[in-house]
Length: 166
Image (tube, rainbow, N blue to C red; front, side, top):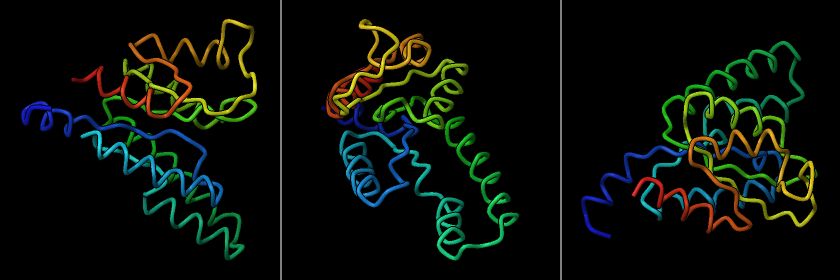
């Protein structure tokens, strides 16, 4: 890669949509994703790395009052919205028996702003509405309508995203 291309890619903010932070194993994979997105010359905007997310985990572990948790939930929703607003694209984990509802809403929000979403589905289960869909057909539509795509490997999704902005 030539130096100017590297600099222009560093300006591409990528929102990392996933439910990975909810489990210990998922959080470990999420850290790997952060490293690989940086290594690809892109800037990750990770909702799992925000102060609001850390505060929620602290409150949940302490079995805090529901009203305190609700206030942090609202702050997380706004923080994630602002991360998507300042991102150029979304890189989404599509695993699960169905795409995570938070991830699906983030995909829809980004799509409404004209931002492409590049997804990876490592889950071998069928999750589409029919044999022509990898995931829910509406989620697929919102992913590809702005130039995004769906892949069966994280590496392929990252390369497609990188190629989109190169």
